Image 1: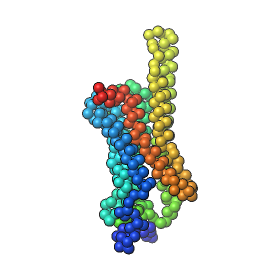
Image 2 (image 1 turned 135 degrees about the horizontal axis):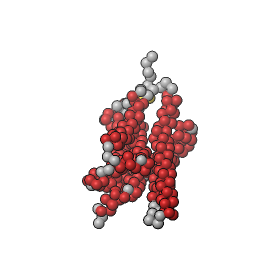
Image 3 (image 1 turned 90 degrees about the vertical axis):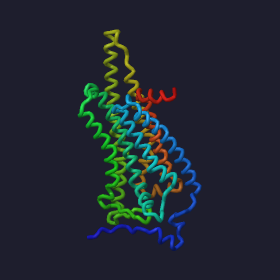
Image 4 (image 1 turned 180 degrees about the vertical axis):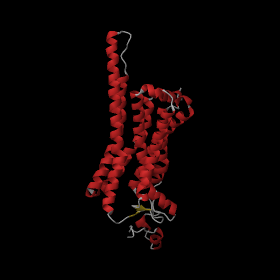
Length: 329
């Protein structure tokens, strides 16, 4: 039995009938789109400057080329690529239907695949950094030793952060749920069980892109806090019997790291992903809010996490913080 897909429109057909206003080809931007473009331009600059600064310092300072800083540099690189491959063409230049097939294909990929890839990649990086800190605190003797096993582990973590989101983003195309339309900015979807497939995909999207990274990050950081608190309690117990021991601020630093890193991530990401889940389960809810452009503004707010992440990790990394401050002396 042949698989039936939704039809692929053709931009040239609408142009021939002089219906360019319907398909939004070569039309001026609306006042809302102008405001949105300005807002995304501000965010583009805000993301690019700190991420490029931190990435450049880590690349050019040999003393910072350690595993923690490499993960942060990879996160900054993902934020920079997110700016140039998604924010710039989609939110600032506002690409749409075109007579050029490449533009139409990129338009489809940007809304369905590129966005998922980079957001998932960024969240996986946050998980990997929490995993690295968890290993460093829980197994300090193994972590301080330079071994081929540790190098392989970190290379595997980086490959997972980059390749797994890319594979999962292309999965609907690989299994045949979607098909690219070269003549219109609209993917062709399989008609059989279309609604169930879309619901399953969007729920899985929310799980892989937000729920899973959030749960893993919180678990690791809670474990980090417990280990740090146990470490501090041992130091205090020893200080009562030996005056040469001093109280360590390590536990308090762990609390601040947990509160700021996890707090910022959850605050920025939760509203958009909760809205996405509600939108799938109750489409009438999103239709009532469509005129207010709630989804667009929630995603804009969530994207500010790309600005906050390098600043937070750069500040709490002593060596990286010193590298940044040395540029202004």
